[in-house]
Image 1 (tube, rainbow, N blue to C red):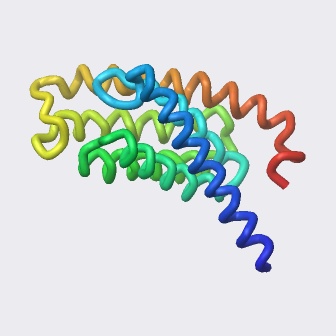
Image 2 (image 1 turned 45 degrees about the horizontal axis):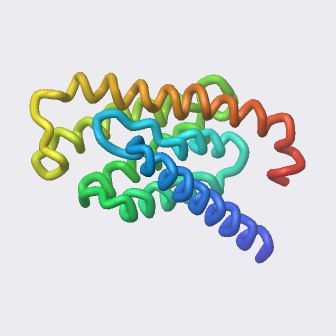
Length: 163
């Protein structure tokens, strides 16, 4: 029983660390936040397809990434919640492999533009629909394309990696 808890915590911590590293890498190219963002780390949101430990790992990784990259408080909280909603949704949709990235894409395409336009966030005015499109397209690239490539690749080796 104790070993399962240690394994769960270790897996979650590794996923969180990987999320932070990939977000930091995207941040070097100016893609981790803002109106146009393609976070490489968001491709990891398909991992709940394989293991439930990915859910807290993704949430913690997003929270730490937002904190470390200098995001505002609203972004730290709401962005992390968007990733949590996406991760839980991915876990719930794991029976339908091709639907796994959808919750993350939708959650971020709706929540992140709110943060960007909110006066308590970044205060961008009259840009909500534009931001829905740009953030949504970034999520389609990172979750829908890169995430599905990751999912299909890991599916080949998943029994050896995740058991």
